Structure formats: C-alpha cells, structure tokens
Image (cartoon, rainbow, N blue to C red; front, top):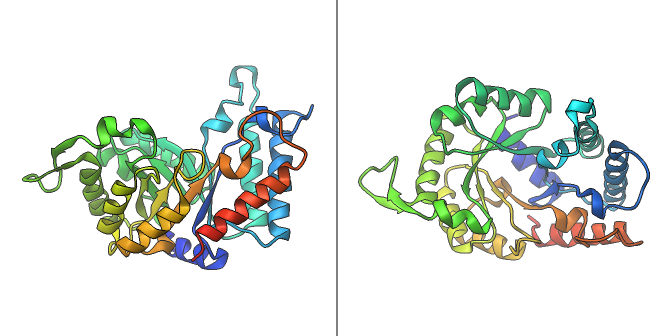
Length: 293
C-alpha cells in the first residue's frame, strides 16, 4: 500500500485527521520510582488502553526522537530513552494497527549521511514516515524517498522564528523569473519532488493561517500530504485549520493535524493531577471531534 493510501485508510478508519504527538516530559508525569523506560512505557500503555476502551484513535502518531534520545546516557551504556521509544512503537502496533507513525527527527544531510538517517527512520525504527529539512536541497532529500514511505519536508513551520528565513522573498528555484516568499519556493520544489516520488509531503504550521491557506490551495490538486503542527500549546486551532483546508479545497484525509503536550500531558507543568488520565482522554476526545472527517 502506498503512503498516500495509508493516510486515506487511517483517516477513514479513525474518522479524523488527528496526529497524536508523543513527546514525554518526565517532570510532569505521575510520580514513580521506576526506571525511565518503565515509567514511559507504562504511562503510554495506560493511555492507549483507555483510548481503546473508549473507541478513540488518532489517524497518526508522531514521536519526536529528541525527547527520547535525551534520556539516554550512551557513555554509561544506558539507553533507557531509546528502549522506551521502542516499547511505545510496539504498543502502537498492538493497540492501533494500521495507524501511521511519523518519526519526527527533522534530519537533513547529503549523500550517505542522509541515507543513514533514512535507514534509521524506516529500517531501524520501522516507522511509516519521517520529517526532513530541505535546506541542503535535492541530494539531501532524495535519500529519504523510500518506496511507500512518507517524507514530510519542512515548508512553513509553526515556530515564531520561522519568519527569519521562510518568509524572505527570493527568486524562485523552479520559476526563476518570479519572486516568492521562501515558503512558496519550497512548496514549488516539494511539488516537483512529489511528482517523482509520491508520499513526499510538507510540514505546514497551524500558527500562520495566511501561509497555511496559500500552501493548502497550491497543494489542493497534487496529492501532497501535509503535517500540521502548532495546535494547542503553540496557539493554533484545529477548527481554524479544518476551515482553511475546506476553503482551499485541499483533501483533508491527506492532512494530519498534530498536537503533542496538549494531548499527552495537558496540565503542562508540575506533577500530574490525580485525574490525569481523565484529562488526557478529554483532550483527545475534544480534538478528535474538531478534526472529524
């Protein structure tokens, strides 16, 4: 099954286009004396079990590898964070078979180095898709173009600093006679790459609705998946995103609207409250309803 088909199937099966980010912060989890691996594995197992009981499923999961790697201590032969990520990926396969998993690693290098990062995402972690930086160009991106895998290229991101480079007006790399904001030039390049390798898509933040609308309209008839972070803690709204996709006539089943801490630990700071699991489930249910398809 192609990655495009996987997205359509998981959206249909789940009834929504939510991507659940899995970015744990140890300091806000329920208190425990257990090792890190056990704490994370049991925490997500409890959430996933409750989700299954209540018939809740996102259309994708997205662990950010940095949240797990920082919990390793390789020089002491301690890989608690990486082992926890492996456990969580196994849990997803068991609780939510068929739901796509995006490894958020934002890799980008050239030649063999990019190839190694692609092998890491697809053959080591065995995920369905990966996030990639396009700054070094075609020979940085193409090693990730595995058959039937997804590649989400940073297009117009959700962070405040995105304007520093992504909104700079420049001569377009594809249409060399025209001036465009950098994010439109990147969209043109993504479209060209995707025409050769279906499954290549774009990361477009939910915090800049003007840019999101422009990019969604450009991609509307091109079967280019969009990963849309920034909903929840960063201020973006799933309702606004859904409206923008509809206005742009973009096929919503190819989009994934991501929320991370707003779903997995919505209390943000301090220790987890006694009703932490109920809070998590309420947050997931609310976002699923906002992004129903």
